[in-house]
Length: 461
Image (cartoon, rainbow, N blue to C red):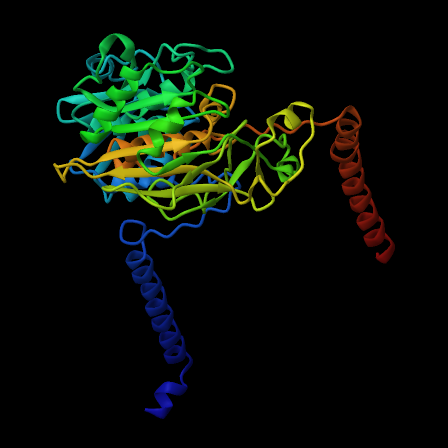
C-alpha cells in the first residue's frame, strides 16, 4: 500500500479527486445561498437607489393576492436593465406575490392593444380583472399604482372652504395642488366642503381638513365640526399663527391648547433656513411619527405656532403631543417685536423644545368608532412651495397624519423618493485639465515607457 501511495500517478489521482470534491462543495454552497433561496443585499448608494422605501415594503407585505406586472420595453432598450433591477426588488420583497415579465410592444402588438399601451417604457400592474398603468419604472409610481390597485374603494377627504383657505386647484406657491395630487396618489378622493351652505359634514367623509382659514368660521360651522368629531369623525386642523380665535375655543373642548405666539429658532439658519422656519427635531412615539427618527429628511414649518396639550383632560378625551422643534427654539409672544425684526427669549415666552403638533382621541358611545383630531401649528408646510418630497419630510408628515385619521395605518411610513439627478458641472479650466491628462499626458507617458524599455533591451544586446 505504501508503495502504491508513493507512485506519482496515485498522488496525481488523489489530488484530482480532492480538487473535484472542493469544486462540488463550492457549487453546493452557491446553490444553497443562491438568490432564489436567500437574498442579502447592502445598499451603499447615497440616495438608497437599490433599496425599497419603508412604505413600499409595508404595501408589499400587505398583499393578499398575486400581482402581475408587464413591462412594455423594446428588446434593445438600455433602460431595461434598471427596470429589471427594480422589479426584482419588488418580487423579492413581496415574497414572490409579484411576478413580472418584459413585453416588446413591437413584437406583441395585440397585448399592448389589450392594455391600451401606446408608449414605450410603460408598465401595467394587473390584479384579477383590474389593472393600473404607469410610465417609466420608478418606485414612487409603481407603489402608488399598487396602492390604487389593492384598494376596493376610495375614501373621501373634504377640505373646508369659504374662509380664505389654501386653494386645492391653485398652482401658486401657497396653493395645495401638489398636496391634492399626493393624496390622490394614495387613492383618496378630494372634495371641497362649504359648511356654511351644507350645515353638516357629508356622510361619506372619511376625513375633514381645515387648512389655514383666514376668516372666522360661523357658529353653525363649529357646531357641525363638533357633531362630526363627537360622532366618530376624523378632523385635521392646520392652523397658522394669529388665525381665527374660534379654533382656540373649539380645541379647548378636546384638551388641545393653541397659544398666540410664533416659533423662533435661530438654529434653523445653520440648515439654510430662516429663523421663522423651524425644523421639527423631536418626535414622540406614535404611528404617525415612528419612522421619522430614521428619516434623512427634516420637516420644516414656515411661520408656525405652538400646539400644547392641556394639563387636565376633558372627560372621555385623551391627547398627546406628537412633535417638537429644537431645544434652542421658543414661542415668541411679542408679535410686534418680531415685526420689527427683533427676537429675544423672555420669561413669558414658551421655552423650547416647543410642541407644534398634537392628536386627540374622543371616545363615543360606539367604542369601535372613536373621533380623532390632529392639529399642526402651520398650514404652509404642505403648500406647493414647501411640500417637495425630495427636499423635506413635509409631505410624509402630512400624509402620515391623513392615513392615521382615515385608519389606513398600513400606509403610514416614509414614501419612496424620486432619484435626484446629479450632473457633474465642470469649469472651463477643469475641462482643459482633463483633456491634457487623458488625451495628452497618458499617451505620452505610455509611449515614453515603451521607448525606454525598447532602448534598454537594445543596450543589453
